[in-house]
Amino acid sequence: MRYSAPHAPTSTLKLSLGVSPDAGVARKERWSRMTWRTGVLALCVAVIPAIGFAGDGDGIERAKKVLEPLQKGYKAAYDAMLDEMKVVREGDAWKKAQEAKDYDELNKMMDSLRKPIEASWREQVTTAGAPFAGTEAELVFAGMLIDQGLAEDMGDLIGRMLTAHPKSAHLGTILDRSPMLARGEKKEELGALLAAVIEKNPDPEIRAQAYFARARAVDFRRDATDEEKARAAEDRAKVIELMPADSLMSMRARGPEFEKSNLQIGMKVPDIAGVDLFGESFRLSDYKGKVVMIDFWGDW
Image 1 (cartoon, one colour):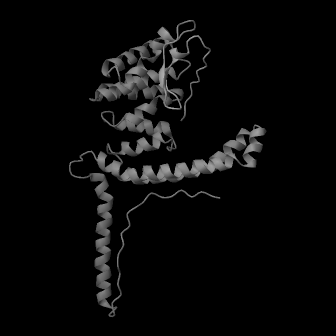
Image 2 (cartoon, rainbow, N blue to C red):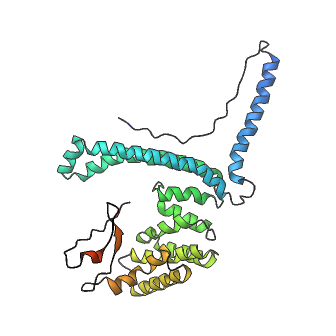
Image 3 (cartoon, rainbow, N blue to C red):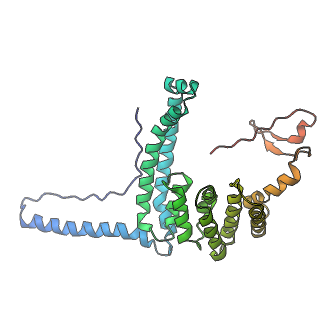
């Protein structure tokens, strides 16, 4: 079975061309008027997304409305792809490659399902965002391309968005993914871009995200110097200063210091509270005196 990604719903202009008995000049005049009207409507459809609705000066809300059906369509397509991938993984070809540890073949089978989806939706999101190019609203579409891993050149897109919109309040997704550039040739460029956001952006939360991104960029590098690590600690202190203590970003910024103070070998394990698979509340201290294995895992 081959999977075909569904296209996001698009508006269709339907014209009734009724045929008149006198198919001469009158029909030609009607066609001329119809062509002119269709052209005007097409122009409006192309222009309205770029200028936005009244009261939406930056076009952000209009862009979100345009993107919403694409997000839903992509999720449906991605979920269908996962269902099909499950079928592939239960097949003989997958099991044979797995037993042989033929990772190239396993990746090839996965890519045969994943890449067509990515290519299709990359094109749809890029096309939908084209009328907003050069405006702050393009961040809405860039955010989806980056967040879903659809961008062909992630580093280039992140760099272009940070360069074009350092003062924007809509840089969240861009900043969250920006530390990945620290592993490549763009690490110097990333530092300058984040510094520009810190200097120019009026939003304290966005500045905090930029400080945190700069600190994480250092964490991602094995060749980071002691001076760079000290600078990262200063950036985390700025995050703690700018954000409420109970915010996720503040807690993440305090993570390295918490680890040094509480999570070293030989230290008493901090108590952990949670809910088990049956909805029952528990604490780590409930198991005092017993051997406990804690499995930390992630899903992305």
